[in-house]
Length: 269
Image (cartoon, rainbow, N blue to C red; front, side, top):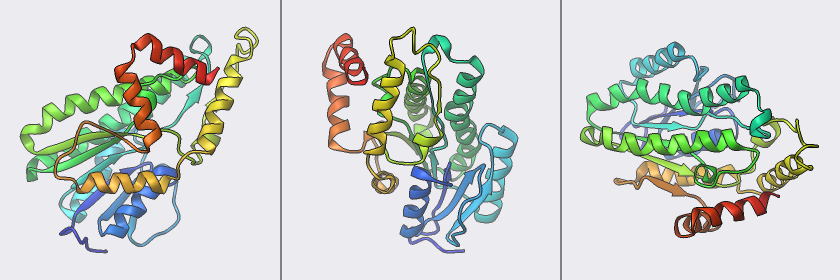
């Protein structure tokens, strides 16, 4: 197993079989971290990245995966909560099962990993948790309400964890990217039920979303940001990636909420 340039530091990344997670795994491994990747799907074999098949919504499987890493390495220095999915459609026509499944993966999966890893970080008196959120957590996107709500929940969780874990020298932050060009776009579960009632606005909004994603930043750009945050001694609660998205979040803070929400609505409709 490859030893780390950072004195054997061990990283655990969820959802690392493709997209952002895959790029993050490769960036950390290249820097010398011992990288464990948790996902349901097998990934291409890379000797410096250890894959563990695990569904983050299965708390028992999560605990067993973390215990395996501890038995092999004795510690977990960095947790990157990246696993997630997306659905789109009007709130009133979204099946409750789909919404609950999204929260199970995007939010409660994050909670499960954090709860499993924190005791080991607390034992050694240090660690870092990076939650992959989204600008949609601050700027709720129409017809992607449940994805936005899930990321907003991640942001709130991040703030609470910072205060809860501060005494144990465990640092917590969230990275809120904007549009990233990955396979996420193709696998999003889309529903245009009720589009006739909404005057075609559901389909138009999703089309704008997909266009922006397909023209978004490369996952490697985001991975570099994660590596930078992993190496920082002190971290702020929230970060974004790219001047454009930093500007959007700045406007969301300084403009009246009704105005920033109106602007988001105009962008997607």
